[in-house]
Length: 161
Ligand code: FEO
Image 1 (tube, protein in one colour):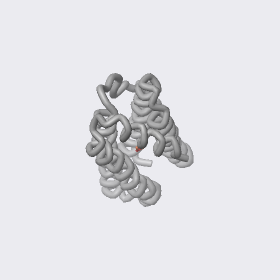
Image 2: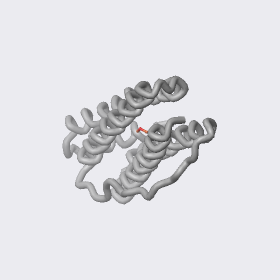
Image 3: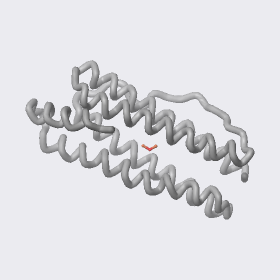
Image 4: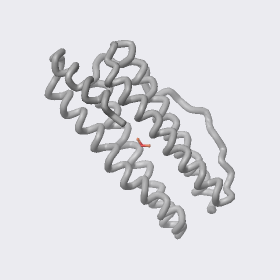
């Protein structure tokens, strides 16, 4: 595997783990607000991000490339509302999509077909990731500070498998 792509995949492992860390911080915010459905949704999201990181890890490993973990940053800590949390979630997923697109571009320049096939899964996944965040954001924009609306959405989000 080309060195540039190995470096970019290792960077992506960091980004996915930073996503997990961000969503776990959001879960902690919601748990603190006793919005357990929202917290549950974020915990599931954090687990998904760790799975994404592991996919990159295994791909490097399978191709005999070295996984090199990096220090991670906490991308958010305090929010003033569920609306603010989901604004950041949606914007964050858009950044991740950009990052996946950059990887596709690089793999394509390097004519690395195995990486391209692997990345295809992430291209589709990001469509879903953005859509999930955007739907909840749209609902929150309509609900605003309406307590009954927030509680109803909390019950919905508690159902995430
Ligand atoms: Fe790993 Fe939410 O994208």
